[in-house]
Length: 242
Image (cartoon, rainbow, N blue to C red; front, side):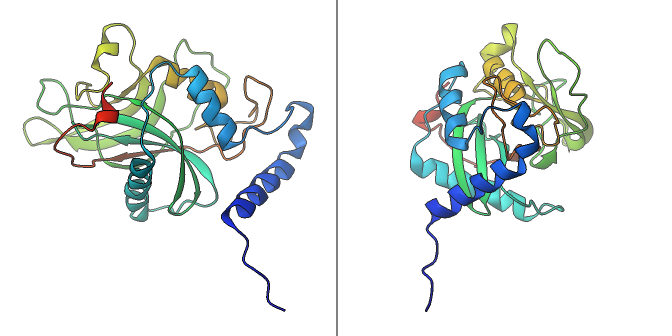
């Protein structure tokens, strides 16, 4: 007797149950599991600047991210969160995705960002590609977390090339007005609320031993990757207005 294939919903729940079992040693610390849908609700409640991305655009950006991952030297295994940034001048948006399977993405939330403008003096282009977060001293208490994705080769205003320490950090003070524009020095600027959210929930901190959210739950599927794409749009979509 043949068995009916499991539905996506059943498969999704099975993965979450497996993650819960894997996190059993954290039972003394965690009071439950923060699912992707839970995390999306908290993004809505806690992140200060957000963009409402239509469902059809979410599918498009999941596909663009997957295309970029296809050429990455280290195939990603297992479900995980990742930060996807569209460096297109007309978009300038950061998307926090949960990648369940290749080509299967769920949007946790989106916010305006700012990437590098190589035409400005002293600035370079934010490189496109897939970047793993460098080693982090999780025990350090920083005023504002800086995500370090290592030294990368990128383009300058003179059509030459230069080295860039690629980072994602909070746009504080006057730099807050740059969000939604191609105005950074080459690093990725994000709303302070988003940086705090990523740090507090450990969304990109795969390997962090104390993986417990501020609400006392364990967060499975933490990732460590930044994916920078360019959608090459000519006009700014309505939803991307910061």
